[in-house]
Image 1: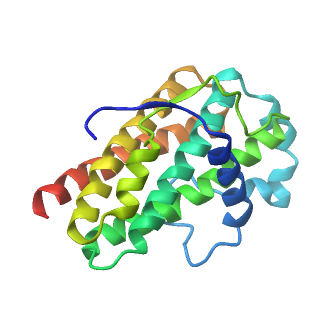
Image 2: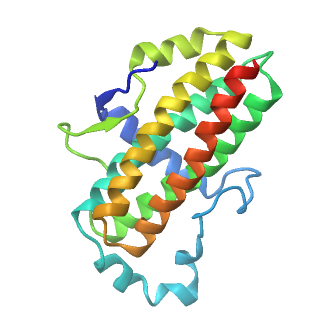
Image 3: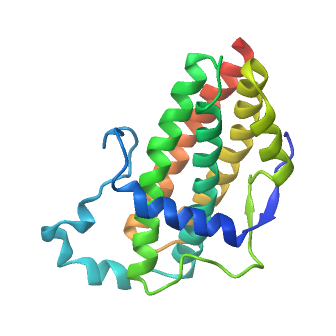
Length: 206
């Protein structure tokens, strides 16, 4: 899992991400304070007046960022859900998985909303690839693993996954235009770099 993967975006992954975005707003108990950059105020009445200006103020890099980060986040949520269903997982790992799921679900919802506002499909053409994605074999191994083995595999895979997200977010910070997308990219870099260090520390203690 030390090698970073560049995989084409599967239509099923995008469909799952869109479905997740649809239910994220009605999700359970995650609080609005779990992660930075998750302000849902764009749907409120005071902010609605500026939505058209926000929607028009974007470029191709912003579109690419949202389109690739949605399925990337969706896989992180899927991986977190896998580990949360298992028995005998250390509490520190389940806590991390819970935080990842709670953070990235609303971010999928947010980015899907941007693309809708920009008149762009959340689904990309098949030629694009993403950094840090797990392959089908990787996901099958995580699904099959149990206990401490599963916890270690989850951490190893998620470190690679987060590193890919950081790479893509830094590209958006460099090339993007939309203020909200730029802010989210910075938040992703900050939060996921911190989680990468947390996961490396956890691996040495398990």
